[in-house]
Structures are given as structure tokens and as C-alpha cells.
Image (tube, rainbow, N blue to C red; front, side, top):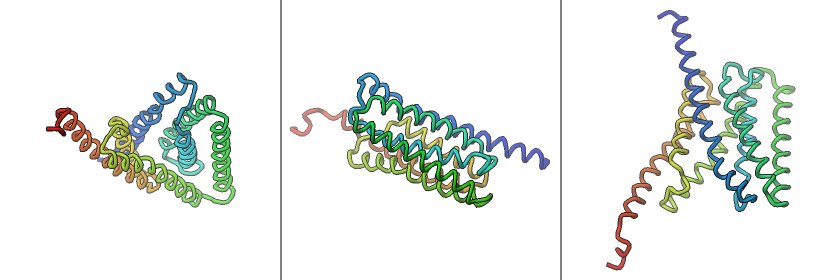
Length: 235
């Protein structure tokens, strides 16, 4: 095969991985919709927390900045997935603010202001202080730190499943989408030879596998428990 053919196949594979990652990420972005339907229906945020959407917005903005050509060229799928993610997070935050009580509303508005302030500082510093390729290193390390920080949520869910021995709070399709997205962007990062993409997503893939193993383990236990006679303990 000619060098041009190899390059074409290589580009096709990397684009396919990036496109797949975008599709699976979309599943994650729309997953909070039932929660916000409930908030709109009840006209209250109840006991729901807005923090995950604040963290999600900051993460998407940083990773979006990393994926733009001014920082790192040739990884447009990183920019597209995070631009869509930022829009979803912003919409969720707006709905949350509308239906939150006064204290929650003020806290959320303060956090949103903090997010955009931090992002503005990152953009300013990366442009005015750093030149390529140091600009890519600066933003890349920030994006990795941001992504790894986001793994606190799967770790919390994993801990909750082990403690409760129940998969009630770990939906199967959400865990599967997380795994598939992480694998897709891990492959995309490897093909692009970009450790700032494949390292955090490799960690995400491992956590996704752990979630699915726990799901199948504890869902089987739950099924077996549900088939036991209700008065078994009194036999």
C-alpha cells in the first residue's frame, strides 16, 4: 500500500474514533433530561445539586479550548464534542437557576461567574504568556487535570454500589455509554499521538469497565434476592 493510502486509512480510522466518541458523549449529555423534566414539572430543584453541571461546564470549556486550532491543530472532534457539551451544561444551569430557591440561585450564579472568570484567565494566559508548543502543554495539562477531577463522580457511584450492593443509582446504559465514549477517545488520542487525550480517557475506560463488572455482579445478586421467598428468614 502506498504512503498516501496508509495516511488515508489512518485519517479515516482517527476520524471514525472521534465521531464515535461524539455520538456516545451525546448520550451522556442528554442523560440528565429526565431530572430536569421533573424540576420543570414540580417547579422546584428539590434536593438536586447544581454542582455537577457547573463542573461539567468548566471541563467542557477547558477541553473545547484545547481542541481549537489556536491551541492544538488536528483534533477538531475534541472541540465539537465539548462545544455541544458546554451548550447542554449551560442550558441545564439556566433551568436550575430559574427553579431554584433564592439561596441556591445566588450560589449558582456566583459559581457560573467563577467558571467564566477562570476560563477567561486560562484563555488570556495561554495566548499572552505561552507560544506554541508550550501553549498546548499548558492547556493540555489543565484539560487532563479537569477530566481526571470529573472522575470523582464515577468513583462516588462505584463506592455507593459497593456499599449498598445495589445498582439502582448506576444505570446500565449510562455506564455503557461512558465506557464506549472513553474507549473511542482513547483510540482517537492514540491515533493522534496525543497523551492529553488518551491518558484521561484510558483512565475513564478502566473506570467504565469497573462499573460494568459491578453492575453485572450486583444486578445478579439483586435478581437472586428478589426470587427468594418473602418469609425465608422465618423458616
